Amino acid sequence: MTASAARVRSPSAQSGSEPPSAVAGRRPLILIGTLAAAAVTASGLAVVTVLVVAGWMAAPHSGLGLRAVLRTAAVLWLVGQHVGFTLHGVGRIGFLPLGLVVLPGALLWRAGRWVVRAGGVRRLRHVGFAALALAVPYALVAWALAIASRSAQVSPSAAQALVCGFLLALVAGGLGGARALAPWAQLTALLPDRPRSVIIGITGALCVLVVAGGLLAAGSLAAHLGEYDSLTNSLAPGAVGSLLLLVTQVAYVPNAVVWAISFTLGPGFAFGTGTVVAPTGAALGQLPAFPLLAALPQGAHTAAPAWLAVAVLALPYVAGVVAGLLIVRAAPTPALEAAPLWGLACGAAAGLVLGVLAAFSGGPLGDGRLAAVGPSGWQVALVAALEIGIASAITAGIANWLRLGGWPRSPRPAAAAGIPGPRPSAESHTIYVDPWAGDATGEPGPQPQPRGPAALP
Image (cartoon, rainbow, N blue to C red; front, side, top):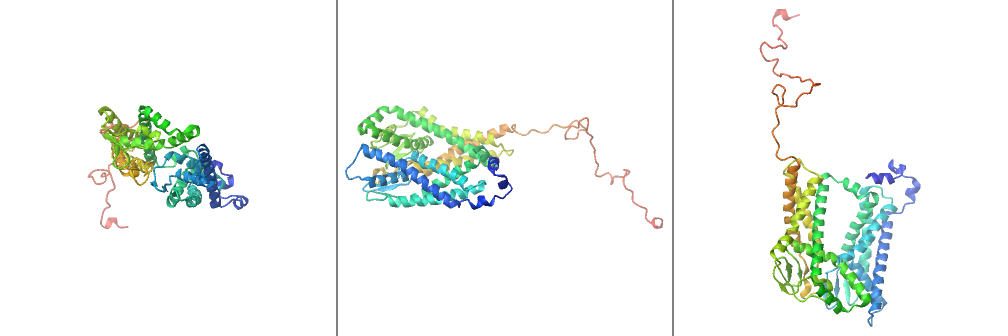
């Protein structure tokens, strides 16, 4: 239990007991979690419904009634939790915007804080029960919403709604509940030094790659502003349509950053079967008329200039160097061989995170040519683990060796009687003991008693 959590507890709670009236008036944790899950779903659906209604009013279509609008809002709310759907006549749609996860994630974060406070949770180990009390009913609500929003045109995946809703609520609600008890500094201080240093290294490496990926994606889009304007004008979205188009493009910005990170790692990504965009070259077919895709090179292109390719491919190693320095700074180790091992562990964990992000950043756009969109999750995970891990291991080993002062030196002999050891001070006394003093001849020690009649009493 953290110090801030102890300060918010009453004296009776600190002693291990609570007033009977407080215990009797407290609601069950599962009831509080169910209320929070319903509130999050209702709030998110309200926000999404407003956007759908605005688009429906700006571009009305015959035969699309209010029931279809509500179903569309429910599908979009599920899409925000990365729930794919099947579109009639097109196929499976799994290329979903990662930016939409911010809305349900923020609402579940607040819901987790409310569940912890309203449920009277006072210990950090009990936050998991509060997160489960929120995640289980929230997943059931998402599953029911996926079934209720099915139509002849669109069919969301009920299994994905159940799994993704549970995981998102568990992670976001659990983090929000833990933050309700204490600040992040106190929560991270509860971790042992070694895992905390690895987490700090992973965070540093991911921050370097995210910044580099964002700059690379922004630079590519800036170099193709003419194509971007042409695609936007060809859609003729209007005032309201332009706003909705802008929101959609902003929602896909995290996907673009993850794709740029995959590009720096080397495997690159695909936008269609048999296509690739990598530092060694690019080969793309016809792309959809989406303005953000103007950042991609059209047709077949050779490799980038040598200096640019080297600079791009060096970014993961820079991230590994930063991770190794942070690991040693957070928790140096006296064993020289241990620091590189922790650097490798940091690279493996960072590769796993990047692989998961790469897998979620892409997906199919139907059953045709665009069935393969985005980077390969396992390739990104493997290459990132190797590149970041090797750079982090070497850097951590060198930095830890320098921090410990290099190779160990032989101790200087002490000045006292040529005996190695600490030099005695003026106020100390050194006592020398000879363990063989009693065995030497002529040395003082206990003498044997005479044997014979004179020795008898």
